[in-house]
Length: 123
Image 1 (cartoon, rainbow, N blue to C red):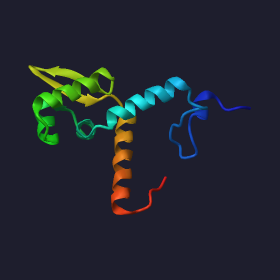
Image 2: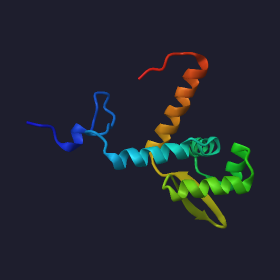
Image 3: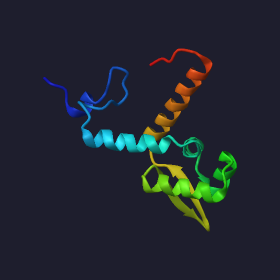
Image 4: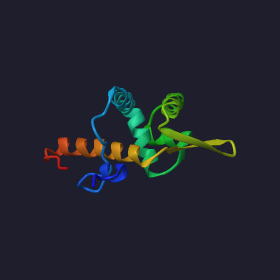
């Protein structure tokens, strides 16, 4: 009996994998998302949000950029659907939308760590 769709999407490691060959829409959207991650400030913001929710003041301190720049980066991430916001009094608190993004950020930083330390990357 062929596997159902849910089990077909799980790879040998037990983690989700993309079923079948990605189409043009998936490649286009993935490239768009990776381009957003290609900015050092946005990557720093996403890494900070992977650990906990934060407001603009906290994120400005974490990444060392000017507050207006941080606000603009957060707006782009919010419009792309990568971060969520909620109001806490007058403060706007940001958080990551899902665990997939957290894993992508972690893997990018792990790859950078391996490259900087001349250690071979592993699966």
